[in-house]
Image (cartoon, rainbow, N blue to C red; front, side, top):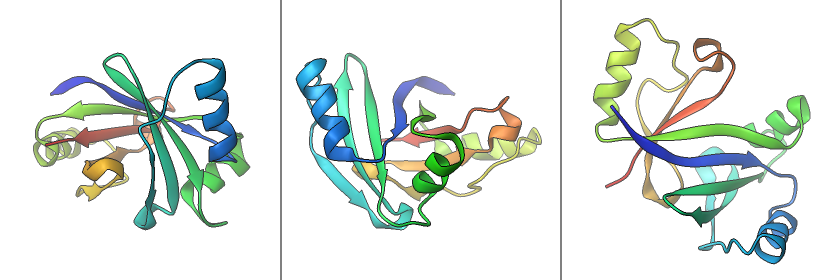
Length: 133
């Protein structure tokens, strides 16, 4: 089922400014930035132990990240759990009546296959399932 916390997604208004804070004040270095056009975001991953922090900046006014920031402010946007077989896990959740945002996986940052579970089914937290090969 779930192997570990893959990463914690944090919505930021300014990726470079956020990176500066993590790198200069917490000594957590990014492994680079990447644009995910499909999701309209620019991301940076910062490894910490066995997991990562994912900083997300919206690239367009209508990006999900900018909508999140407009509604709730910058901060933790989602928690991603690593799974081995994302299709199987999505089907199991769907069979249990869990509300999904994505019924089929899509590609996210770092080449991961991802899908989101709706916060209305999780007690308010946006959950990402993440499969990495």
